[in-house]
Image (cartoon, rainbow, N blue to C red; front, side):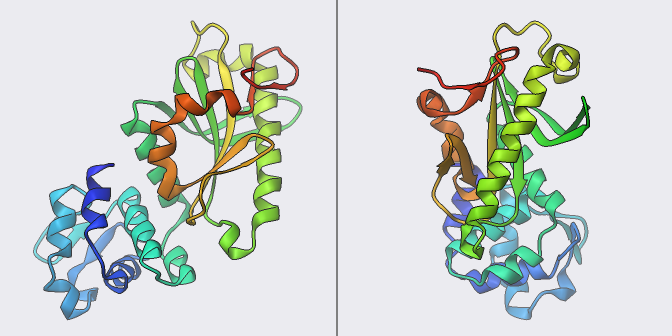
Length: 241
């Protein structure tokens, strides 16, 4: 468990966390004057500062980076706070920043918003490399809790197309991907979502909630044999069996 997760696990008042998020909606600067009096006097700000999720800039301002805001949002949702105001308080850039931060913690080399062109232009939100694996990740702020199960299935299939296309043209982009000397890399399509579902699979493509991303990466090697992956030049998706 990451340090921030340990601190947040001790918080039991989801309303306070929601108020903290809404006070910085769309911003990375937290103005103390925008907080309710009770929250200003609580120990929440100091606790978050102790694990570098908040940084005090002055007596009246704190820096509140996107990856930390998403961790706070996850805990607020776990404590039963309504989904819509939590999601409205986050930008998609903040959500992607959270995913990048977790991957970096696990020593993946991360490329953010990787664009490439073949017969048309493609973009993969995040490519995370840990030899010989390249996770090709699409970030979604929704989940099946908002009735988006079919959308997630479609997104998984679209991510497989992007991953397959990258694999088919791998030699052209190998230098850009930072894996010029890799032998037999595995390109693995994957979705990360904001809401709190358990880890799911669609056609062996993992759909992982932000709350479970750390645990998923810790157990990743044990799950490899059940995942969809693509090898450059293979022409089709495979599995490790």
